[in-house]
Image (cartoon, rainbow, N blue to C red; front, side, top):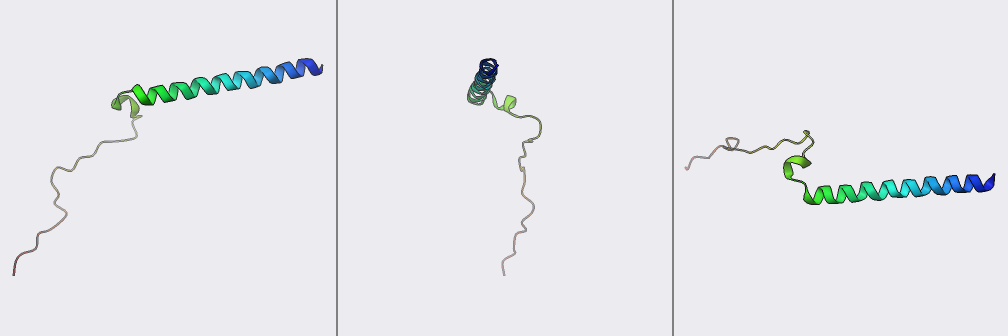
Length: 61
């Protein structure tokens, strides 16, 4: 009884470790080798300012 439970716990721990290593490795290599377009999940938008009209020029006295 205790042997089966010990084998089950060790199996679950080993499986969890392998899944964690696979996820970490995939994330590392995906961030290293993925293109910029692939890294965007749709929530980030690229904004570029064409002409800054927020500042008004002061006239000389």
